[in-house]
Amino acid sequence: MLQRIQTVWIAFAVLASVFLYMSSDDVQVFDTNIPVIGIGSFAVGIIGILSIFSFKNRKRQIVLNRLSIVINALLIGVLMYWLLNLSGGIEIPEKGIEPVFPALAIIFLAIANRFIRKDERLVKSVDRLR
Image (cartoon, rainbow, N blue to C red; front, side):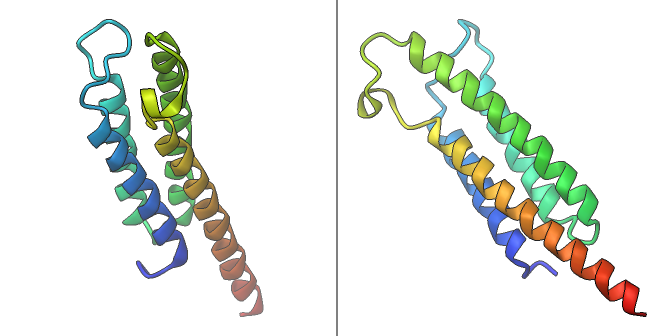
């Protein structure tokens, strides 16, 4: 059942986290050597892949997607903190588009959760008819 529409949306969210991971190699957030954004985007990617391959358990898929949404929201907060503490103005071309990737991932995961719930309702309605 990997051909379902929610798999496509989850894959888009994983791609957004991969793009964030690739663009976060020079981001240093809290004056530490810990790559907070790299670890967060890597975790979102792994959780997304786990969610794709747990297609038989729709409830687990929804929980994993919600966890990924929370991590992405935290990443947006960290990235906004980083952007506001950089020198210069707040112009997007000057500073980067890193906060866009977690925001897109949140949108993609919310759409995927909608389709997963739709499948769950469909399965429950078919079980009622038996």
